[in-house]
Every structure is written in structure tokens, then in C-alpha cells.
Picture (spheres, rainbow, N blue to C red):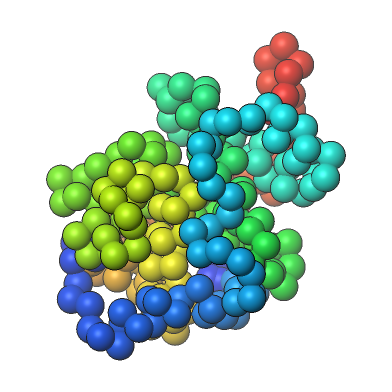
Amino acid sequence: MATFRMGGRHGTLPIAPEDELRARKAMIVILCAFGISLYSGAKGHCGPGGGNEDAGLPAEFEVMKNDNPDKYRDFRHVLRHIRRMNRKQNEKTSLSVAKALVDHVYWERYSFASREHRLNFLSVIMGIVRVESGFDPAAVSNRNARGLMQVHWPTWKRYFSSPEEAHDLRRNLTVGTGILRLYMRQSKNDLRRALYRYLGAPDDRYADKVIESAAAFKARVLSDPLEQTAGGKEP
């Protein structure tokens, strides 16, 4: 299995005042295991981009392909993986989810020590989203966890303007990865322990699923060359 140095349900654990303070400061935490740092001077607080995720997607793909080939390659890997994991999802939603994921990982406030660190980060997020929501941005659990990363609304609602905003792709990823970074710090960069906290229980089955899903995505990126889709069309 590929290794990562990241290098109950999240939100059910009681949040101490010092934890809330750390959560509010999570966007300036450095995760050495990821080789990732956050630039506190960047504008905005809601993640990369905003607005309607579906608007102008084809044009944005072309811009991405020309301006940032690495990002475009990762986008295609993410899209292909989503289509394999959730074959019933409509194409427009898959495109929007894939773009939101790579936009988040390539956000200007993130700085990675290497491409492998970026891939580790992307792979872990892909693993969590796969297990938590099956890449469905409309997912709601019976405990009122919402969106791609199943952010627990009753606990983290202060970071959203409404329950509906918890399903916004970019906002959900920003808050969800902020929670994960907080738990990584508290767990001394131990991914398994951080996943226990994210779930809200020391459940090895959950942690194994996330880690295995992350490893499977990373292995495909490293070993499986991209090909054009049927009919020779991209992405």
C-alpha cells in the first residue's frame, strides 16, 4: 500500500475553546508532513474562486490546459477517478466536483515542498471525499453532516452562512480541509489518529477505507497513463 506522510462523525467530539481558536487560525497552520504552507496574506477566506461552479466550465478547461498543464493533468486524473467511483453521477456534476477539487489543491494560498507532497494532499482529500460522500455534493447524513467532506453542520455552522452553503463545493472543501488540518496538528501529523477525530470515533475500518482509497487514487496517478475519452474528446 502506498504510504502517506500527511503529510462516531467529525464534529461529535466536544470542541474546547482552545480548539475553536485553533480552528479559526487553521488557515495559517503549516503542515510539514504535506510540505504545505498557507499564505496568510492572500485575499479572501472562502477558498479559491466562488459563485456558480457550473458557469463557463469548457472555457476554463481550455485555460487550465494552456496555463497550468500540471493542474490540468491532475484534473483529468480526478475526473476519471470520480467517473469510475460514481458511475451514476451526471457528467456536469462530475466535472464541477473534479474542478473544485483541483482548484482547491492548487489554491494560491497553498505552497508545497514538492509535487509528491501535493499529490499526497490531493490523494488524502480524494480518499475522504470518496468514503464520506461518494463525490456527491448534495449528500446529507442522518447526523446532518453535509457536502463532499460531510462537514457536521451543527458543530461547524459558524463557518457557513446557511445549511445550503455547506454544499457549496469550494466552501465545503475549505472548511473540511481546515478541520482536517486542525486534527492533523492535534495528532502530531498522524493521519490515522486525525481520521479518528474527523469521524468522531477510533474506528479502524473507517480509517482503513480512507487510507486505502487515497492509496488507490495515488497508485493510479503514478502508474496509469491518461488517455483521451471515447471519441477522442477531452477532458
